Length: 134
Image (cartoon, rainbow, N blue to C red; front, side, top):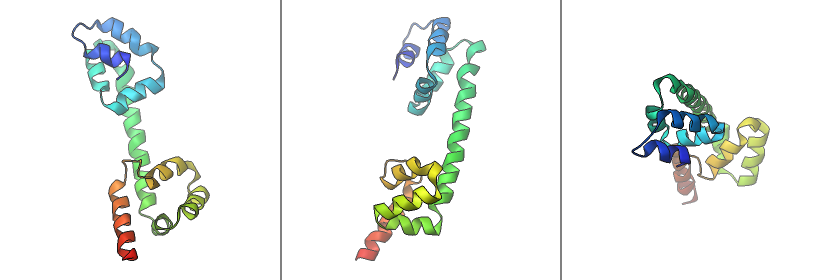
């Protein structure tokens, strides 16, 4: 939790001071508050006239996340992707770089099991690999 989050969750919060602190945050720091799940606590403590500072951004981030989640789900359901996913990493990497360059980092994170999105599908693929190797 960053300094703004700690201040917002303390007992004595000056809403105008909190607003100033939020205004000084970088976009990345605001996004971290959202991704770690305590942005709503900060929003609740802001003055009513200043809440849209974070509410609008939060809505944009959620829309963006939903868009990418749908894109990734569509990609991992593709039969050719599944075939490459089960194969060796080098072939998978070449396939991703050729077919999905804009999603490379997300798809590599998915391959490595570091991405929470789509994990049930990966578990299904791993079960298929185990079944094939038996």
